[in-house]
Image (tube, rainbow over the protein chains, first blue to last red):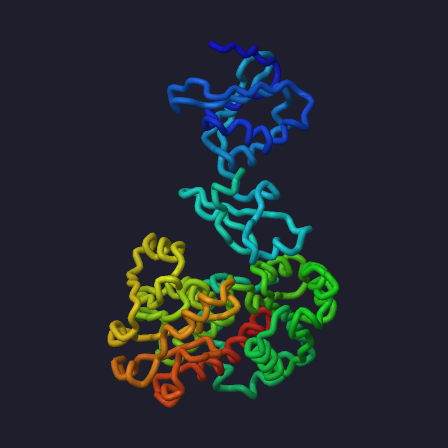
Length: 145
Length: 304
């Protein structure tokens, strides 16, 4: 059994789909934060079989929960204070995400006007479909990371 | 301030009002001859489209307003690298309302976000062409008297044809609509439209041969296979003459069926059909002016 030390102040992202932790690390730009980060890959999980876990020792406000929810809203976010879990945050699919993913439609106005933000809107919450605000091209999973 | 980006921006009730106004304009043209005195329409066309641009210009001129604008990107500041956002900020100082056509999808929406005047999407790539949809709906409503309960055949390029996609989305809001999609395999209607129809339990069928379905149609919407939507010349050449509506096929149709086409047509409707009373496509172009007149008045707050 692998042991990773407890964190005093920060958050633990649990139930990450196995293999996705590094992508989340990059999307949350954790490499830019000067704090302790533990990435645990392929941990045993009753719920998922295998899962990844991220432990980050920094203030929860540093975390963009919308980005995280977009990547996987099934992730459990545990907020840690004084070494204890003080809150479990529920992730809700954001209605809109800005500059997290890019529109790859070559016919979209964002393909020629570089200064435009890349905004995706939640078009179908049940099917978790996001569409580009401008051209309405569906965002495809394989272009995600 | 209101813009028109998507044909669904207006509710069915708002469309009814718009079509009532267009019908009144048709009957009482002199009443509206000075409705837009002192107002200016800017036609910002980043790609050539003589028909749509002239229809807008005709509409504003018939309302007593004036028109400024450009007819292709090379004669605009876009050629110098100006963004759509900057262009519309400037146009907002010159005009009271803007009709914008752009080859890139979403460009008019970008403009509407920075604009101080109403923006009408006059076609954005393969995305939307809402005033064509309004034209189609007004034509059906005026010639048939209502918009519900029709079996409509859509024929030709159902994959890239934006007028087709917009018309389908607009017609699903009217009860009793049935769709018959007539296209070669390569130009089938996109999956997302099929999914939408399934979700809403709206009947549809997909066929390849036009002849087989002619008798059951109340409306037939023909489309041109557009060269500019293809990246591959070979595919275009192979598919461009797949369907030709001629007098023999019209024989199979109901005596009250209407043939619509967004125009321009190339070979897909034989000229021998033009004199058939069921051919409505040139009347459709006339309705296009009336509906744009009604739209300009509505967006400028002058409808009442």
